[in-house]
Image (cartoon, rainbow, N blue to C red; front, side, top):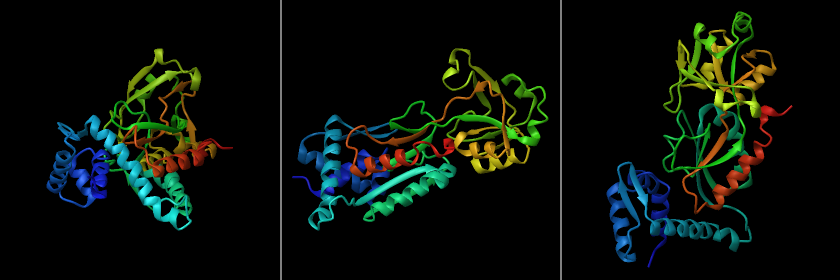
Length: 307
């Protein structure tokens, strides 16, 4: 016989990369989680999770129980609202992780409006320099850019280009910038995020759907100034300190206002779509689905592309 605590335990283990992270979600110690998991496995007569070099992973039986636990707990947490005639009200907790700059400007207002629609739902928004690294235990992680490899399941939310630009005053000095290779002669400003090689910039000839990936050019820029804060890197560009590649969501208003100027318009940088990451392909809760829908509704069309 499984208890509600057992279901909460497997839900936390399935949403976490390690037993320590699951213990934090449950406000327990890691040894206590280990003992409870072993007792549940003994009662069921099956192995639910296995330790790996990078943490813990559910077995096939664990995945099935995890999915059932999410659905059962979802219904149980919504039961008071249904009984009281307030059916449709979501309860429980929703943990969201997002990047600092994008999170402040776009995700925080979405969370605010989502809360107004679901007053009984406890929502936690954590802003991070590296959302994927800090996503342990999160129900949903918002990231900018495609993932190279990950155990998270990605859901595209909104298109977002990367744009090469500089201040209007600085752009007037770039009389011989005609090819990405010419960037090696100028100071470039680099944003350090997601442990990427930030001085290695890749360009594709053409723009949008016309870009030709087969003729991509990779340039090693100077990176004379770098930071892990997107607001700082944009401020440096506005101050005329060098050339920067930035997300469209951040610089499109500045370009429209004439404060920044797009450079090398016949070349494209790799796209960086806004993505929502969920920890599992199965067992998506109604809270996760509802917030995914809220994200898509708020960012379609993207605010940075609206006239």
